[in-house]
Image 1 (cartoon, rainbow, N blue to C red):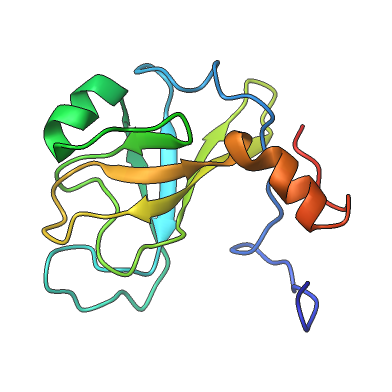
Image 2: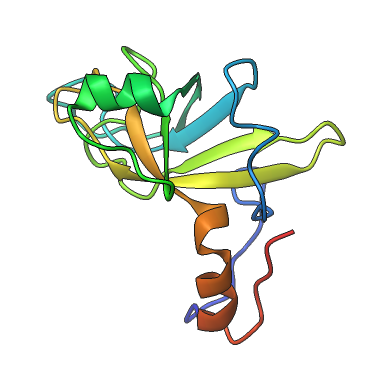
Length: 142
């Protein structure tokens, strides 16, 4: 629970949490991330909220790139100059549904310090039950 209420404006808006991701986790779906972290290696951090459209990466490809297993609780997305970078931990991985509703599918969890590898995001849908329980049934995935 937050100490103060959020003040919604053009830059701060509520977002839906998905119960399932199957329809968006494909190579043809446009994904977005946003944050104030480095936009290139060695910073500095940004003064303005930055955003980037990034591509979904197949788990097998990402595993070869990162030389580690990608778990069911993770999503891999981005690469090159369009990826999460230093200080972007927690940044959202978002997609817009066909009806225009925005969903947050991930939160940046593992970031390459060189800012060139795909970002690894914690998959929101995987944690829906935990979110529901932890928020005393106040937050639901739809």
